[in-house]
Image (cartoon, rainbow, N blue to C red; front, side, top):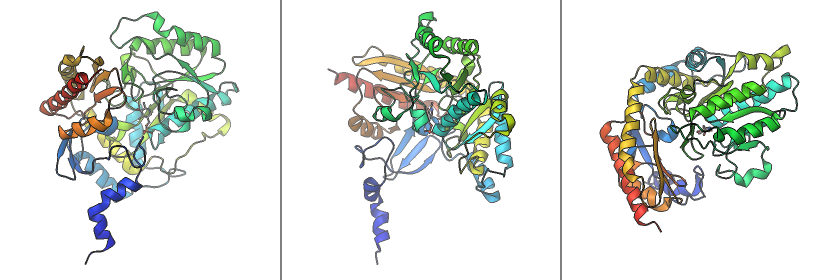
Length: 436
Ligand SMILES: *Cc1c(COP(=O)(O)O)cnc(C)c1O
């Protein structure tokens, strides 16, 4: 006898496609998603039996790959204690232990930890901290932020308002967003010789408007979803100096760059500067669960809490114990691994392997930093054509806009990485041949 549910078991993909929304997608999605049945190491297994090498770390997060025994076991043992309790009025050791790790690793003097439930929320929290800080100090005019173009900080309203106003995927909402100050994207590239011109407009904007500005917010070194650009550490040093000169707070969004992706534990280390507020997320739990955190200095928490005032934020699932437990395990796993040499090796393999694509017709740039390899094209890529082709070739990459890029789990072996690079080069050849 068959029941409607039996049909569903055979036909769930059809249901899914007409009922379940996907990120940045039409309904139904323009290109149907691929169904994954399991994932292990750096391999995703599709329902139809095909296996793909993962070049995405599930959006920068799965740095140790999938189904890792140490991470699985951290969740399993926490599950036996409790999966969740509210954080208002209650606390637990996993939250304290994770905070201790973050405080130890984060640049000094960041030692106050607020747990958030996603990267976007961590950015909202950072912005609210900056605003509340100045309110507590009586500087009520300081309601604006200063940032740079080409940035990406998340999809919620506060975060959207500091994403690139044109390429930040949110221009539909521009009328509804808070108005902030935007300097040009840092033009001085990561290993280029510093040119003071690179910071000139930023400096002018800051000098003219500092009375209205509460904080500067930036993704340090790597502008991720806003264009995968790598810029000079000197830019961060200059920004820090300007913030100090004018007494502004500096927020670093390390959600994409944190936990080793760029070759440093945090990208800010390239510049040897510390922010006043720092957001982490994505790789925090090794890609297992959604969790993020906003770290601040004691100066900030002290001002906000002056006269017993409270910081006005508190998600229902704040400091979820399962997520904290797996984050602790993921950070320990990272620190116990030779991640620096591994990430450096991935970088040099990207550099060598992608170099042949430079100069091809339609290719505007090829670059690599840490475990990030990027091919930038002149024109937007045709996803409807490229996505299935990538899967046919056995790799999981998710290009966007004019970018074909990879950021594989750090544990990827040389052979699997070589395959990803080969496929990137093959796709680039094809795009180049079709160019013009
Ligand atoms: C992904 C990302 C965010 C948003 O994080 P979510 O968990 O998707 O909300 C914010 N900032 C940066 C730099 C990111 O890469």
